[in-house]
Length: 344
Image 1 (tube, rainbow, N blue to C red):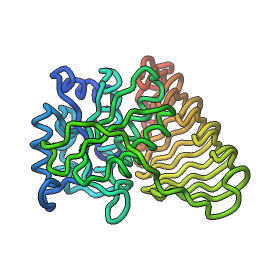
Image 2: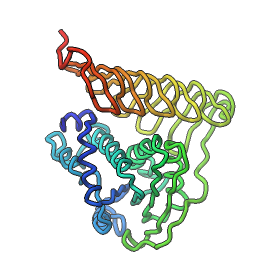
Image 3: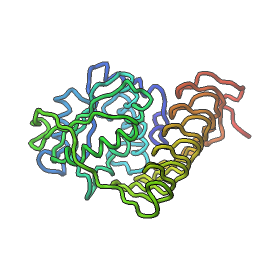
Image 4: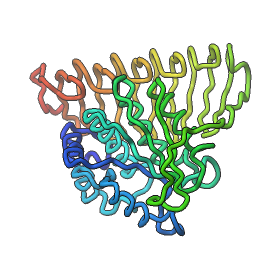
């Protein structure tokens, strides 16, 4: 199962349990972007690791599940893997599971160390933090209104208050569909020498560009600062009606929108080649749909809040399949005699 996760991004329930073990040890999850030992001064990976140790923190790779993935024969060294591919599959599932574990544990604080600019070479919008981890945390927050952690950004470049913090705040609020607390720490002297005061991001992100048509009430084409592009119907400046949204990294959604979110019927194509065709509610997979994995596996059935839920059928690429009932992503019953059967 570990190999299947690394190659194809499959999720298994035991993964969340392994991540929860870190919370039982009172450790703090820490996310980061832009630290590398090729950098100089405060932006090195060594400085980051010292900071994580000082906060009794852990990274995704340091969970029990993460080590199982990294040591898998398919991924001898995570840093050597390409993107997309096994590396993307690892981070997708790892960050989903960590976000769910954080929600189950009611984590009150999320620490983020940043060594990135908003634009330029290798900007924030191209980082795994922005493309995977923050999005999955926001997705985990949306169905749980009572869970409202504070996001503390430890910024070594001095860009959090005017730019980076705003971008992270905007992304989280858009996907969580509510107000989110984001605060910035000035750490230009080093991650362990940050100023004590927390500042709220303030300023203004670059305005989206209406490249064509009416992007207020009508049919138009809009492009955002981080490279996302929407072409379709607008109402009061929001995506409403039929449209096509192209996201950074090659992801796209085509179908029905309501207030900027997929809502109704549509097709979502993921960066790694997976796709989902079916119904959405408030941006999440809800109702009947078909999820096609890049590996050739196919699930057809019910969904609730992005998880398999209700009756469904899972067919593997090798022809074996089963039908059953799922609840909150976990199979709870086999409803037919076709258990691990091979289609002739």
